[in-house]
Length: 267
Image (cartoon, rainbow, N blue to C red):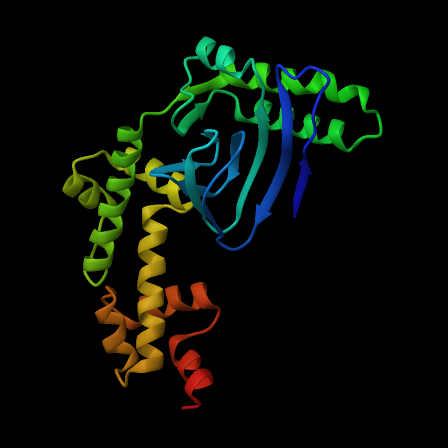
């Protein structure tokens, strides 16, 4: 569900809101490339969003600058709030908070729950019948939120994404072997704790869960598309015994490998 309230102009043109919204998506979505005629501040509250070379994860925010081309692609189960704004005082505000007028930016948010409450209050104000509340909420939401945004360097974002991609690649190439998470972390020269944190932030699941997901998807495909025995498939996806493989498969898909093949293929 999304709420869009556009072209809300205030008596004080020094700072005014052009739109405010909330969106919760179950599937991925791509927007752009395009350029906006105002500044747009987004708060990510679930999932992640790739935009213009950055990845904004839950609890982070990103600013789309006025007049600059941008695009973004969301993850599944993605939720965010946004507010569009403009006015003659925007350069002054950006100068106070060391923000750039001429580039998109990614931020840490010191208190994401509080910033979310600001957006919720703004949406409530804008959807109420009391139009006097508009004038007070317009500057206050920005003035309250901007001090809580801490710039996240683009190079740091690229670095963290690169680590995650290395973990993914390692798992994809080695899922058929016994894998320990500490060995993956050692391979890419980071700590297991940091690897877990990055993977959870980017995908919402742990590296261990991603390994399980990979093995189960490979096993399901082999059950459907090959004539390999269940034992052969178990060994080919990293399990050393049929009982252990069958137990994990049953827990993951709700049925045993043999019964799954029987239902799907009728044999």
